[in-house]
Length: 107
Image 1 (cartoon, rainbow, N blue to C red):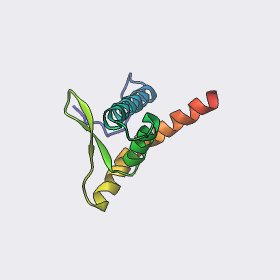
Image 2: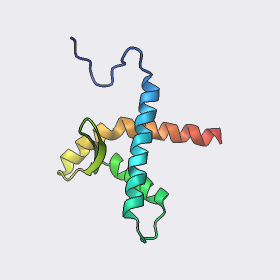
Image 3: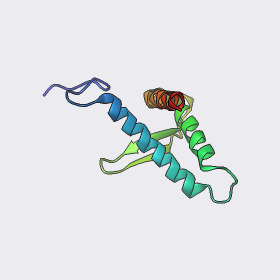
């Protein structure tokens, strides 16, 4: 069986819908993290979620998947490792930006 390059379209799968679902899942993870960790700090959940997306964009957070569960963990590596993680996170961050833009234009 031939291997498929990352990001290469898969026959029968709507890649836009797949990316949209990924963004929604990550957003839900950030929301859960905001709810759990914001006890009495005076920040809104939206501020915490926005901050989480910023950390994700900068490579300070990475997605982890053990096959059954998805989660977030800090990227504690050096600057080069965070830069590499930011590069890996970039497509999802950009797609979220596009979704936000479309949502703002629709309202």
